[in-house]
Amino acid sequence: MANINHKLRSTSTSLRLGCAIMSESNETNTIKYDFEVSPHRGPATGNNYYGSFSFNGSKLTGKGIEFIKLDNFDLSFLNFDYSNADLLFGEAVFRNGNFLGLIASSEEFSFVSGFLDLSEAYFAYDINSNFGAADLTFCLRQVTDDNFETLYSSEASFIMGA
Image (cartoon, rainbow, N blue to C red; front, side, top):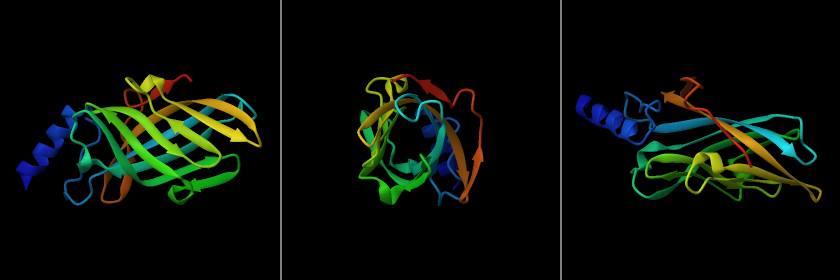
């Protein structure tokens, strides 16, 4: 069991997910990100909105482009709390083990991942035909036995321009 956990830690490090250490119980391989949406264009400009998403990290191989289906999604945006059930689709995107952002969409908003780099990712929204765009900040968390604990925000956070 210790050898498996060591391999999981090595794999997560090689995937540049060094701070997303798999649970010692080996039952929970959940990776969770918190994010902040900061609109800079459109009717929501000047406000910040917060959310999170998680997915099964054991599905990552670190090779090529990977789309990992979200297990959980939460976003508080314009006085409404969105969940996974409100999404038309939602996936975390990786390229050769590097996190590129989130692709997710509802009827009101969309997350667009980067193609080559996380800095290309952005958030777009439509409120009564008033379109807007936002910057994103992501913060990776560690998950242990269904308890979410913030690891650090300096290296795990990325600010992106649309």
